[in-house]
Image (cartoon, rainbow, N blue to C red; front, side, top):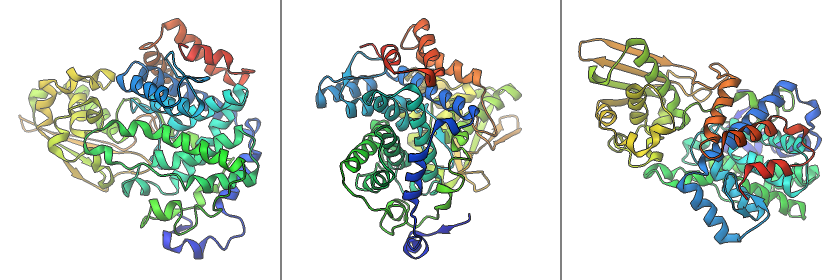
Amino acid sequence: MSNVVTPSEFQQSKIKKSVTVSQQVAKFVEEFSLTNVPKEIINLAKLHVLDSFGIALASSTKDYGHKAASAGLDLGGEGDFPVVGLAHRLPLRDAVMVNGVLVHGLDFDDTHTTGVIHISGSTVPTAFILAMANAKTGYEALEAYLIGVETGSRLAKAAAGGIHANGFHTTGIIGAYGCAMVAGKLCDLTASQLTHAQGLVGSFGGPTRAYHANGAWAKRMHTGIAAVNGINAAMWARHGFTGPETIYEYEQGLYGCYAHGQEIDLDVVTNGLGNEWELSNVAYKPYPACHWLHAFIETGIKLRQEHELKPDQIESIIVLAHPNQTAVCTPEESKRRPQSSYQAQFSVHYATAAAICRGQFTLAEIEPDAFGDPEILSLCDKIHYNTTTDTLYPDYFSGTVVVRTKDGRELKHAQEHNLGTDENPISEDQVLDKFMKNATSAVSTSRAEEIRSIILSIEDQADLDEFDSVISLS
């Protein structure tokens, strides 16, 4: 890395520069225009937006989706803004919060792998709800979304998993900085105000990863929290509140606190900004589970197919994961017996076993009849994990599975590039198919097709009225 420093060195190595990172980001945001973005990136952005709204529609059928909406109603009452797939309309910040929960709730939303951040989960609801609030066009909503992706992903990439390693959830922390830039663009903040907005984000608390302790629903809230914190910071800056201009460089700033002791490369935040597109490094999720599990799921499916492997042929299984990915591996006793869909989505034992037993990992595999399936649970008991640094983490979430059969064979597969990344991509047709499957779990096929058509031509929409009318039931 070209400018790797530890937080304790920040003041000496960076603050002496006359232009801070937040000022450079602010200038980029103020000057950014979709007219300068390559067509292929615009098309990619629309697919990620489509993917996000499909997941939100599927989440609207779930218990947590209904509880999130009822909490929003209890807090703010009825409002002007839609909740995807539901009949409620909420005040601005409550609508953004709840829609953030819906996009992220199934853990099926995209991830910038090196940054370890669910970037669309917060930036999509921020961009589209605030665009409605400010009477912006579909073009401007898409423009703001891309700003959030490019700034938020780069800020997360600078820590390269370091925030995660310290026990914090990068999505809920860094996402707020990207959302502040989304809000700032849509609310016409100046470069100075955008700089202060970034500094003000640092005064809002950041979520932890304590949800791993019992598979709690808390993680589902983090995209919404990031979105609301970003909006709050932008609005306070708009009205004259000042924030630290060295929020990224300062010893007690973002990285000094949340990535303490980790290596930080601040140059990646601004190098190539506006010319090299981090959206290309944002991976779709082909499976509804923690992205760290995808290589193991893919490997389990491949071993089953290539060797006609059946669960009753297996003596033992070893899974090899990077040391920073052990949250999905331990404690092994509870990982072998998930008590909820969320625990199933964060268990390498369960995900690997389900993939081998069923040859797939879909929304059906996170239902109670699946994580209570005796065949899958029996195979879970045969799975153990070890750590390895022979992976491509954090750029890719690699995984290796070693199966020993009862007849003495050793079957091994190492999946270096998880499916959905640039090195192992899924096709546009697969993204569209994923959207339709998710969307039609909540709405009719004709309505899903209408939503798809509007989003895929969103830059041509003079306003978001038609989009509003089809995305919710209100």
